[in-house]
Amino acid sequence: MRTSLGFKMEKRFLSPAETTEQIVANGLRVNSQPLARTIVLSLLAGFYIAFGAQLTTVVTQDAAPFVGYGITRLLGGSVFSLGLMLVVICGAELFTGNSLLTKTVLDRQLSWGKMGKNWGVVLLGNFVGSLFFAWLMYRSDLWRSGTIADHAVAIASAKCQLSFEVALIRGILCNWLVCLAIFMAVAARDIGGKMLACYVPIMAFVASGFEHSVANMYLIPTGLLLKKHSGIIAPELTWNNFFFGNLLPVTLGNIVGGVVFVSCAYWFIHLRNQRTTR
Image (cartoon, rainbow, N blue to C red; front, side):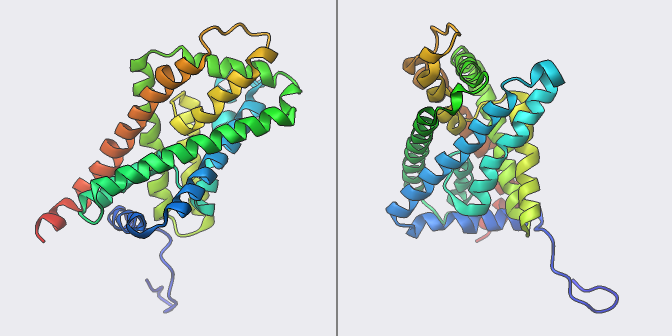
């Protein structure tokens, strides 16, 4: 692009069609990426999302009486967006974001088997990273400050009380926004644009109360670790309810939200006709 003075201006962002093509190209890494690299990147994503989740717990622990419930959720969502910013800008393999690999599969440049293997490794790596970070925070004794322990247990307990259907739907809505955030971050051409692309949708999903599987891999185990140190009675907060009452439906919902409403939708809009005429 050139101005009237003849100076060449760099394009500030990609169009939706160009972004879709770029996401397909990015997905090709799965064909050649070493397993060890995938494992390390997935562990990093677990750490990064946990950074955002723990910061949300600290910031929102006692804010509601001063600024109200809605603003408290806005603040929590704002600081939680740090997690995706770290994933996108520093580089990591996040299970929810890897829903977008479906575009590369539909474009016939990646097999369903390789995508499934990637999802399995990344999901496990995110889980291990999140658990390790929860243990680090527990051993740090930072939860002894203020009402952090009670707040962490309350958050985890509420998540374990959701019905399967509610958790599933909230998971769908969550990853719809997460994958749109990644879509916009790919479209952005500079750090500021990528940060803003991560911030707005992530703030929206947290403030709305949607459910993110990887965030819950940190939040609920943290509540379980702090349960005995809290004054809150939470009999529903168990490992069984974590795995089968929350993590399972939320993960399934995250897959549907990212695959159907973002990955397949934009593949259908921008790439389907091109590929069927090959």
